[in-house]
Length: 511
Image 1 (cartoon, helix red, strand yellow):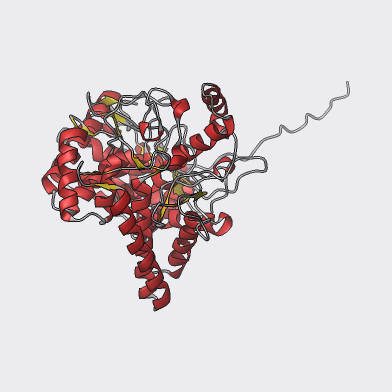
Image 2: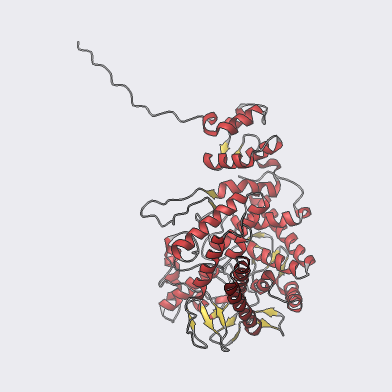
């Protein structure tokens, strides 16, 4: 009988073990006997890719207790899970899970390329978002993650170089709009805030927001620029692209179908509402119960104009530091003119609040919202104005669990009873810098208590909260998301500011 030789089986190279993957980190953990049983670390599950973990290890060079803390931060270690972390420790452990490496998307993907690591909000938000990232960075700063702050700035400035602005998020379908302009405040957190690249990016951002200003007639608007009745320039939210949003196409078509106005106008207002970050809110609605009455582009918002005043001041300071006196004069003049326009058109002395301006009705809107705190936050309000806003906050916006977004329960997510992390920070910073430290601290205490209560119940950090009943928030066009970048950032930053407000009893977070 002829005996045939059996073909050798096809095999693949075996995967490397922890010793080979983690090299110097592995050796340090085992040499220092961070865990009594040598098997503990080799069975741990990483919360980030190996390259990111090793890069952080080489930067931090932790030893002893710091090495143990490093491992618990970047790995799920058998028997060592969050039982004793507490809220702040839980947030620290989330950063690696929300961190993504530099991205070169494949052909056909909607993702935009990014040259450096970044942090995503979490849940359905799998890309970096503009204004979210400022509040995320606050927590990264508090938790010693400076390299990640710097790398996110690299990403944002790369986006400006390629597209002329920072889009809403890093997807192709966001390239018609931006978000509230926080770049100048992000740059203040950079390792090297005086780098000339930062000033170049800030000037490009200002150019983006002011396109259409040249030759604009009194009372007219073009893209994001509005010429007020006295000739002053202020800004509004906008989106350069027409039609329903790619990511909410069915919802937008349905909303337009409920209106007797042209569908194209509804889509533009919806898109502008998305640029505002407040998607959606009674701030933009004629009838708070009907999203189809939206008219965002008719509104001159106080938050946007406060941030643009801050941007103009930041450019003026940086130009002066760079020895460019002409640029410094130009932007100081722009900031002065904007401050006068905000004082004339948006400050309502009889009501003691800053309001949005309705271009069609030619009067301030009646909506009382947390946006009234933005002039305090950026340093634009004087002391009497800040005192009046503080009184309004106590009387109308302070909820049991933090700051309400508005007083109106419309069913939209940027309305009552919801509270949002970014608005808590704006309120706390704005009130504290204007002499209302006790109220600022009280808002922080209420908010931390709300976040902690929900975490103890669910094991999750959430996108928004019901500050009336201290439970997970609701409303809007998608389900409540967990993760969550800006909640983590603001909560860590508030606890860092007032360590005695950190909840005392650590618990095992649900998984």
